[in-house]
Every structure is written in C-alpha cells, then in structure tokens.
Amino acid sequence: MFSNLSDLKKAGLFYVLVMVLNVAQILIFRAAAPKAEIVVLTHMITPLLITILMLFVFTRDGVGQHGRFGLGLRRSGWRTWGLALLLPLLVLAVSYGLGWLSGAAALVVPTDGGGLPNLLINLIPGLLITTFFALWEEIGFRGYLLPKLLDLGPKRAVILSGFAHAFWHLPIMLLTPFYGAEGNRLLTIPIFLLLLTAAGVVYGVLRLETDSIWPSTILHGSFNVFLELFTTLTVMSSSVAIYLVGETGVLTLLATAVVALWFLQRRKTAVKPVLVLD
Image 1: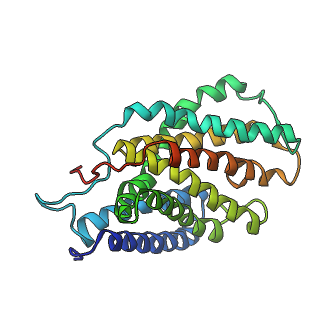
Image 2: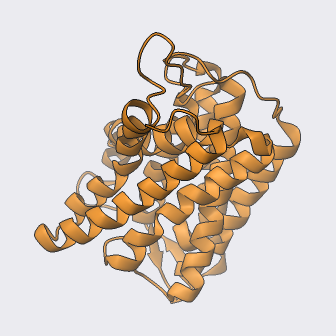
C-alpha cells in the first residue's frame, strides 16, 4: 500500500496509527468494560498490533521473499541479560533508599501473606509475566520504530524512540483513572515523561548494541517488577513522597538519567546492521 515510503515516513505513520488506536481502544473499552485490567492490557498490545499492520498491510515489508524487517527477535543478546535484570534493581534501590532516608517514605517489610520470603519468591513468575507483556511494547517501539529512526543518528534515535514510548502512555493517564492518577498532574506527568525517555535511552542502546529486542524487553520487565516490589515495601509518610520515588519521582528520574547518560557516553553506540529477516 505504501511501498515507497522512507524509513522516517514509516516511523511517522507507525506512530500516528499507534496513537490513534491507543486512544480509540481506551475510549471503547473504558465505556464497554470499565475494568483496569482490560483497559491496560488492550492499551499495551497496540504497538504490537500496529507493527503487524505496518509489516503486512500498510508497507508489505514482511511479505514475500524480499520482505526484510529487523525486529530483533532472532538474536538473543544473552550476554547483556544479567545487566538487564539487575540494573533496575540498582536504580530503584538507590532512589527508594534515598526516599526512605529523607523521611518522606518509609521501608515496611510485610508480615502477612508469607512475608518477605513469599514476596521474593513471587518475583520469578512476576518477572516472566511482566516481561511477556513488555515484549508487546518493545516489539513496537524498539523492534520496529527505533531502526526506522536511525537516519537521524543513533543517539537521536534512541532519545526520540524513548520519548515516543513515554508520550504513548499519556492517553491512558489522562483518559482513565487506572494509571498514574496520584499527585498533581502538572508535576507527575513531566517527571514521568522524562523518566521513561531516559529509560528508553537505555532500552534503545541495548537494542542497537545487541541487534536484539530481548535485552530491552528483559530490562523493561525487570524495571516494572522491581518497581512493584519497592512500592510494596514502601509506605508514603508524606504527601511529597509521590514526587520523590516511583514512576513519578524525581529521585527515580535522576538515577535513571545518570544511567542513560552513561550509556550514551560510555557504551558503544555504533549501529550494527539491523535489517535482518526475522
């Protein structure tokens, strides 16, 4: 249908379609099935659906013997899996630790439901489930979109793809009460956008370094799982705590931004050929 589009135009078309579908499904499911789980899950699958449509309907890049596309699914990038698993733990331990020390939040170890041991055991199935859902987003934003932005240069591409992913969350934040509803939106939304952009830089660099979508997917899933863990272990002692820790916290933003800058400056950002047949 649009076989002669440049990569940047394909990126633009992908993003317009993913935002339109995102808003449409939120409005539909918010009214028809106003349950948080349904609205959130249908929101998360939109990047995957639009990627499929781009490859097999709108551009036909995935059709026929000459169809070539680089989603990064074939290579494992296993050498960075340990980093992907543990880096979010380090970032969140620093940010939440500072939050606890400030007195705005407090560490509370649960005693019911098996206590801390049971909480830690549940991390393994939680990580598997969360990583599976993170894959839906990563296929779209780091699998499809990021390689299409490389004409802008790798650093600009990882920053822009990170911001695009962050901005994609805005409809569910603004149109539903199911995501990021706590705190003053004038403060929480800018912090959230900057945080996810910084995290997206790390995801993107790993994607380009390894020519694989799996490290960024594991990192994404690991961040979400450890975020839930630290949230469970934390009691907000002050109304300002929401602006210090978590996805809308300045401390989390600063810790993530430091890591993102290090990735941009210290880790190799030379781009390998990413157009492989998956």
